Length: 155
Image (cartoon, rainbow, N blue to C red):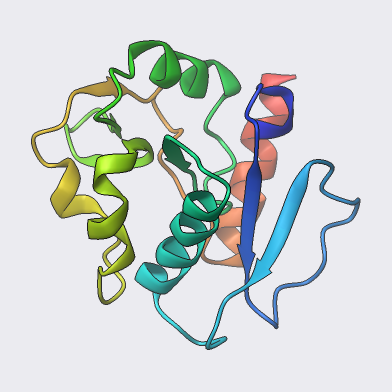
């Protein structure tokens, strides 16, 4: 879904045990999560450090286990981004990825700890509300089956 959007660089942070995608990820640089069992914060720090190295002025944080987020939502985030930060929110008002962070937040993103991600940095950020159901992530085979059904209905 993100491949269709005009980003200059794309990084996918992957664990050793992550199966390869069924097709190559054109335009993506895959970076290993190190150590392989590190929490979400390490994945985020790895991606932000890679973005910093290529001179990025901002990063979009998107999770591969949220396949129901439409490209139109990412486009709305980018359009509303003022250079500081902007979050997605579910219909209950909870801030979450996808989110955009300007370069002034890179240092804070690189030192986060644990499996909570950047939620604390997004509490008071402007936001774009996700379409209903787009906030679901894939953690189990049942989640995957539900997402496949939803994606099939969207076609």
